Length: 135
Image (cartoon, rainbow, N blue to C red; front, top):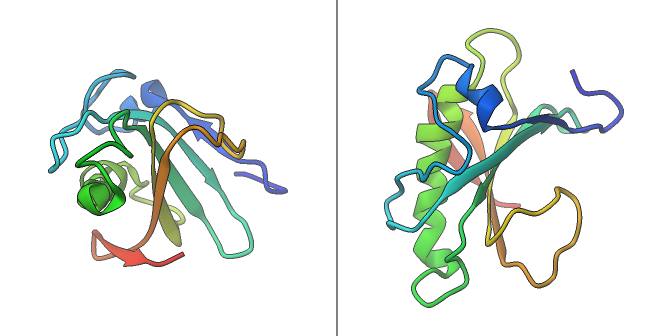
């Protein structure tokens, strides 16, 4: 478990071992908007508000015409329910929050990258459904 604010990291290879359908880093994921989406990594920690899982995706088209936040927020919800929830542990502590993030290119977590468009959305999980929580 994470201690002292240190984020734990899982890559596509590690998540593929979790019992869900295997995929390779860089494989494209299907989303409602049809944009190109690939998994970058999953991070988790227990800050003051409880366990948080962050699923980070690379989405090169965001910020372009037809790929504004309003055009792709449905993709974030879709990935929360079809990608993140199936990868939660069946036993043990459940996250208080899942954060889905989209970035035009791979970025290092916690490092400001001003020239890269990024979108974030937070959800709580109830009955295997992602419920939007506003930041």
